[in-house]
Image (tube, rainbow over all chains, first blue to last red):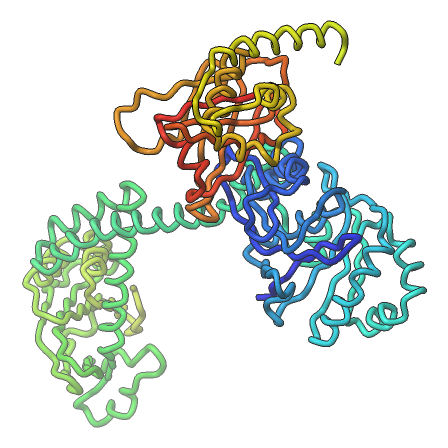
Length: 443
Length: 171
């Protein structure tokens, strides 16, 4: 961070600022020389310069009373206002490096601000007299700064700009130093603009009180909004957790009836319940997808008759109607998988007049497939158009069997059974073989 | 001094000369010049640099404060203090005195003197008298009826003004 030392030129010498202290608001602001107990004669003017409504410093910093110590006396005049105002603003931003009585520049890693001018309540910088004298008395100081490679910023009112250029013509050292950018000359119309443009500091408090309030609010708006959002997210996360935890517990306890009832209630419930149900479904879907990917089904037409063997080949998703059909279920994962398979005859087929005499026996098979193993299921009476409902799970669940048996009795339960199985995180696959032996996905 | 003022002051001086007739002492160093006392009362600025020295003379001090009291300066008697702690606030109907520590140095204090009534005579000095010790401090210019002085805790004046036993005169 760049620090600044502010000096006040007078017609006698260059004066440094050795301390700025915020005092009790009841106390009038004072300027003293080197920690003395005597307030300098300009203290009254300084107090008026600080205290609102006449002064500007209170409007900028919010403090109505200061004690400021300077390295040598200033007895009269108002041209100290610009330098003192700059010093207060820098001090308020913790960017001011103080001078001491023996040495105006106590730290060589600073930039020096040499400022002379008066300020009105709008922070407009006004011109001053005796500028030539002040510059002349500061030349030795400028030389010392240049020798120490310390940048000096000469800040005066825009009104004094032309006069300063005339002074430059008579002083070769100053002219050269400005050309070499060892000394930077800045003429200022308004102090606020100077800080924003040259020092990249904004003076928020300078506007009237109502704007002040808004600027203060604006300053804290981001953290306030962030805090509210953070608290809202935390609260929602807590509510969602309160929804998901009992659902997970019900699932672990295999209390499927209550779990499904609660879930359907939550899907129509409050925002947190809806989000909780959504998350629960999402995690179940991940589990189901994992199981679906773990089991691969392979439909293999076959025939024991030698003349049919060649034509009993699956071509895309169809096979010859006189061939037998085996289903190979392979567990490609690392964990065992439980498999249920229900085969039932398609209702659409049964409603057909010519098949009315056909007897339909639902077939339910269940078993376990170890990792990297395959089981083969022979589909008997394969000429009947039928639906194959496969369910996969990590553990054996008797309820799956019950649900599948119910489904075999009432085909209208297909959708609700699929929904239940999905909700509980089981993998499933439904295939339909029609009367021309075409295998197609139903779900 | 105009004619009427001159007559008035002469009258007052005669009065105090009468007062001085009642003053008698065998010690030669106790003898005081009542004209000088009067001059100090009338022209305090003339004695800015000598006043504290003059007040060291107990007789001078006694007569001087008697005159100040009689003449109508702002005055506060010693306080009826419940404790012997330093008094940092004193107030009467005529003035308010407040002592506030500085944030720069806890040994430095600001003395705020607020005048609550209008006075025709200029108020130039703040006098403190306690146990026959008296001191004076020049009051800086008033701003909105308030004047401010900087005091050091070790100063005799600070010790006196914060002593509940001390009397205060402003003139």
